Image (cartoon, rainbow, N blue to C red; front, side, top):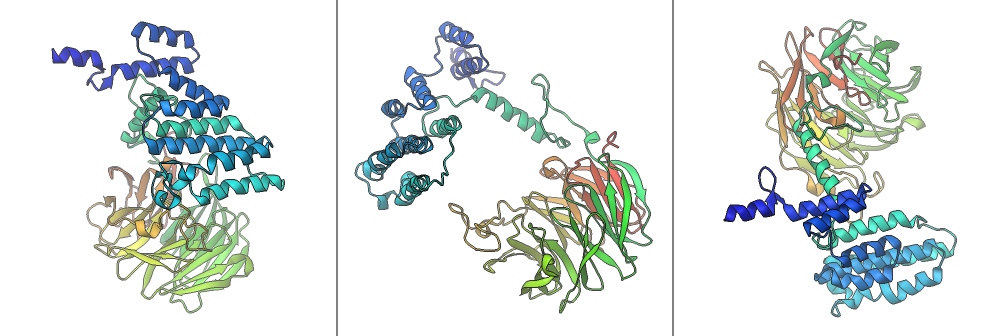
Length: 561
């Protein structure tokens, strides 16, 4: 008897779908697809109504801008006083903004004084002080002052309010749906949203997914992709260097590649849309081993550094020398890192960090002592925080604006180098044991990078939310001796992959699925340690590797060359 009830109320192969809810979503979908008659017919035949007439009237009132009607209907849609209070504020705020946008300043002022302001004390006589930290915290003097400033700006002819009420009303409805019981007011396009969620789960489950842009996924079959999506096919072997190649990097626009070698040269390469690489110019030669090449974020400059403790900046394209800066008191140059403005750089020595202005002839802007032998450094996506690693094996987060420091670790072994994903969300720490740790960085932004240490409004200090442990670990093949610096790189669609070289007579390029940690490929071909890997940020099917064998190898996904 129980099973019959379940089969009537719940459907699906696993009996997880509430039949009534499913029918309501079908009714909504039919209406959105332009078949309102079919939606009405389904309501009639099933006896299940999409939503109560009150909810329908409320939705129509919001979308038509009839806010008085919406406010009158609001008490019939929920019993949670907190949510109702917030909903009322949102409706009146939209009414106020639309009055300003329409130039009706008198109506806007009336709404502000007689409708919005009383909300501070409306809920059972609760005052502003008691509201702080609760759901009502958004309805404070500060919030009202912000609304009032909009009115002042408009009266002075400096409007900051959008004149498009349609988009505002749709956004308002979405906010209100989050406050009201979903059983009464069905979220917009809910069935489509559920289907897209299911499709995204399929993408996440496929470790080889490497497509950008809109996907044409079938609803009739499970999504599947294979190794052909990865850059596993060797298409070029570049032999222009005469000794070990230590560094390789693509420009952010994907049109250029640079390599650095023990032979004292740094080479600039042109990259075609099809993935062909051609030597453009030798930037540097005969000055001692070179181990740093770094493109500026705007792809118009490249910095080169090496054993002579000088940082040189060249124009791209052309390769004209724009700047040559001595590392000063630094004991060698560990890293050269561009800041997001493409004008400032971090010069990181073994025990010192210096910020220089490239546009001002390399003038020193700031200098910080690091206190220990430092091996590598990277910068957060916003340019506000420097991440270094040194002798103590800890990851050091140093915010430039207020000098605040936080640490992760120590790592179980010496960290030789660091890599960040181009979107700034992840950090990889390569250890000399052949193990790579993945760390989530989250949103490292402060309110004003390089200017203030204050967190963004409403956000906690990102340095207080650093991870306590890595979220993934990747292991290189057996036989890793830890004698060399092996640099890894994030790449692919959504930077879903991590690639790294490895040590050995026949060093390989390893590719892992970033999230799961599954090794997807080990590319052979080099005849020496693979020192670095670079993934083209604009072509997810292209990768480059450099090795002690003196070559740079270009890898493309099969059929993409």
